[in-house]
Amino acid sequence: MVDNRNHRNLRVKIMSVSILIISLMLVACQKTPSEKVVVDKSEGLPEESVIPVEKNKIAKDLGVPKHWQETLYRNEGFITLEADYEMKIPEIYNTPVYAYEIRTMDQELLEQLCAYFSEGKPLYKSQELTKSELQNEREQIAKGAGNWGYYPEDNRNNALAKIDAQIENAKEQRGERQYIEAKLTAPEPLGTEIIGKPSHNGANRPRNFSWYYDTEKPIGFTARIEKGQVLDPVVRAISYDDEIGSTTAFVYRQGTFIDEKELEQEQALDSAFDHGRGEYLHYLASGLDQADDSAFTSDQAIASAKRVLEELEIEGMAVAECVKAFGSSESESFAGVVDDGSSKSHGYAVYISPKAGDVVGYSLPFAARQGNELSEVTYAPSFRTANIRIIVTEAGVKSFEWEDISRKKDVIAENTKLLHFDKIKEKLADHLLYAQVAKLGGMDSEGYENIYTVNNVQLRAANIEAYNDPEAAWLVPVWVFDVAYVSTYTSAGETETYLSNIETVVLNAIDGGFIRVKM
Image 1 (cartoon, helix red, strand yellow):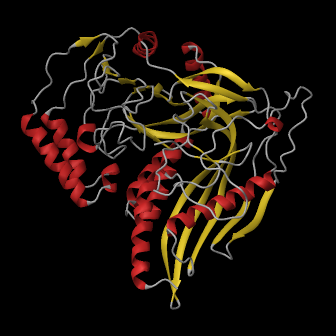
Image 2: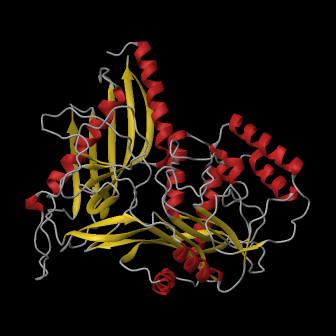
Image 3: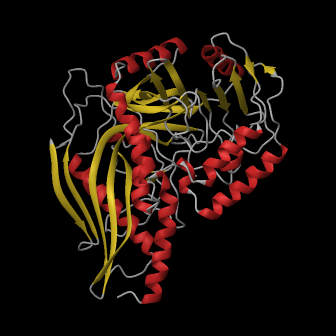
């Protein structure tokens, strides 16, 4: 039995970890079973896993059930994995492994992207916010609107102090525009980023993608496009720099939008940490639901997104998902999509990733790490699978975000043998055990129960380390499991819930190894 002091210490540890997993990715953990394991494996493909390309269209026998209904246990109920899920895995024939390398944002690529989205309109330097614009943002901070609702009162008070200092020195009106050419310079913050977000460098890599790093190196670009709209679109670029910790990316954005995938994350976080943001999340959900009433369809959005890829000559990528989107072309705020009086529009967010045979890429969320090293087969690629999100409304493309821009450099295997699903599900249950053993830090597990419920399963592709090539990554087939997670502790007949969340576990489909992003 855990004594009260240890009980309190453990609770502090668990709550600290829960804050770190705000990106909904499972933290790194430990293990105990008898199977021999290798720490941080980064070897070449096993010889028996490399097989010929399937030319006779005979699907791989992966043993995936049509309906997965099962309960798996580890350590006498310390871990319970419950599955009652209708599997939607298509037939799979070929699963190649490709080597990718990160691409720098060179002058040619920057000019091509800026020219395409500006449509011949001039670029001008983004200007500092005026007093009235800063005061509007201050109102959002003060009432904890939108994204500001995540922040405790002390954090919001700090943000208010920062913005008050900016308001004091801000101009009443914008000055004359300074027209610029597409050329990398030192990164520049945009609007309220400097209020709500810290600077980042290699020692403090962001959990989500960052467009601003505190450096004088010429790795960034920020500009507005003079389109004469209520809010002119912004273009931003960042280039790979290993020392800084940046990867190559580009964004064109008109206003502020949110999609269904993002809302699901918001809802899970609110449920896990009790932010009390139900009213705001209901507002977002209602806005997204209105997309159903529009004459603009998901098929039209996908066709528009594919046309963008074709015109930009981006090859080797495919549509992974298409979900509803909602937002405003006339408003920008760190608060996100809020009821600020601006007109709202509805459309779709089309997610696009590299295609590898019969599977499409999956971009890992940035994962937090505990001090404990994983003692199971583990992969930690230095950059994530490339990902493009295009938000399209009836009025056209409102956002184009291309992150972790990379290019194929080699074919490692034209086809691979994948583990049977019976082995993969056991690997999943084992990994969940390793996670909880690590969180206990050697303490007694008596009284603790961790229940995981499967709510989504995908067969995709994701990056792992490239064998003998530290600058590259291998795109391999992976299983992606989203599991609802509840942790409880029972003592003296009383049960308390410590953590409730949605977690994502990504396993290499070739050997079952756990994949996380290197921080």
